[in-house]
Amino acid sequence: MALAVITSRALDGLDAPQVQVEVHLANGLPSFTLVGLADIEVRESRERVRAALANSGFAFPSNKRITVSLAPADLPKESGRFDLPIALGILAADGQLDAGRLAAHEFAGELSLAGELRPVRGALALALSMRRQQVQRTLVLPSASAREAALADGLDVREANHLLDVVRAMGDSPDATALVRAEPLPGTAPAAVPDLRDVKGQAAAKRALEIAAAGAHSLLMVGPPGSGKSMLAQRLPGLLPPMTDEEALASAALTGLSPPGFDTACWRQRPVRSPHHTASAVALVGGGSPPRPGEISLAHGGVLFLDELPEFARSALDSLREPLESGRITISRAARQALFPARFQLVAAMNPCPCGWLGAGDSVHHCRCTPDQVARYQGRISGPLLDRIDLQVEVGAVRPAAMLDGTAGDGEASPAIARRVAAARARQLARQSCVNADLTPPGIDAFCALDAAARQFTEQAAVRLRWSGRSLHRMLKVARTIADLEGSAALAVSHLAEAMQLRRGLPGA
Image 1 (cartoon, rainbow, N blue to C red):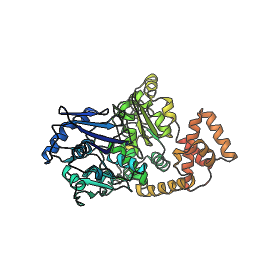
Image 2: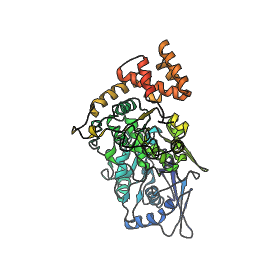
Image 3: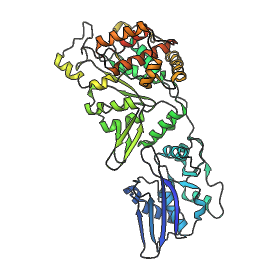
Image 4: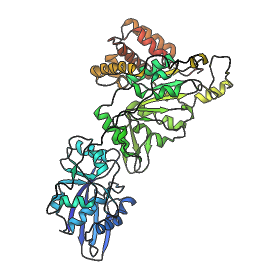
């Protein structure tokens, strides 16, 4: 047979569209032509495939005119994932392999010069696309990639270590043991998370952290250096409930698209991303060619911690505004567009002024900043971004006596708080099928209804504080979370008052 068609898949953001690898052998001047909007990594597969076939003991049709077409032609293709289907297509077109046996399979894998199969990027995203499209073919991948793809239930995923394994399974006398069914990568024990009791003092900040965890609210902590802002942020993951199956799969698929790839040690653990303040807007929201997910997508289902918030570039911070509202990011380029989920929990920390001691309230540290310097420093965070942060709390300096009292810590331990958080989230999901932070305006009207006294109190406070409609809605969501932590069905004035106290804005502003 002079023509063979092998099915594979490309990567387009988090989607994996199907690609037909068409291989045609013809008489004429010997050549090896690859067409179909292939990147340089794909074009280099010609040499890898040639060497892999020869070193695996197969006859390469060097006296033929070989044409490989990757269809559809207008879909960009990148990486070495097409090495394996191209090699199988050449063997099938040359009559060394039965093309009919290949039709019920999809293949992806990079070949070494010796014919060994190397892992490919985005294996789980590929499997999830097949499951979403209800494709019934068997997926054949390199071993490490196959075990990652097997996390998606309902697919027949087979693993192979060498080109010869695939050929033996697809040959005239198929070897059923050549391609074994892939088992999901074994999970590891959850990593130990630091306890909230390690933070001395800061009762108000700990309460804000509990509320943020219960309702998935964004949080900004403002305080002097060394007051414990970073310690508090590092303890938030220990308060969050376990990931659901869909959250875990989406997080793992996004991580698999990043250069380090998916790490089995992180399976079912909420991601925590802490980019340095020199990160660009592209690093935060994603980009490149082809588009790759940024920090906000890699933090999907988890926490994005931005320390020294005013030190980030203004353009980078403002790029967070739309994802904070929508929970997704669309990266548009001239030739293509990629959509990535980005439902992350923002936790930020900052000093109140350049020197850090504005409003310290002790006799040792005095703020040296002028009002103009304070205004410029705080002005690096735009009003629209600040308006989208649910909780804005001050973290005061801890007294030396409290630091030196010799106790292990104070307040409740993280497991006790985590149980209250889990109970509050269960109430939210049973009532509205989402966490409070994701309530839409109709949901706020339905589940944050106020009686006459609470309505009058809220209206007077909103007028006095000059809140926008968004600020008012976000305060109501926080109040709803406080009520859920108490097990209250109705919003009381006390819930509203605490939510208002937790949204006081920047000190000195």
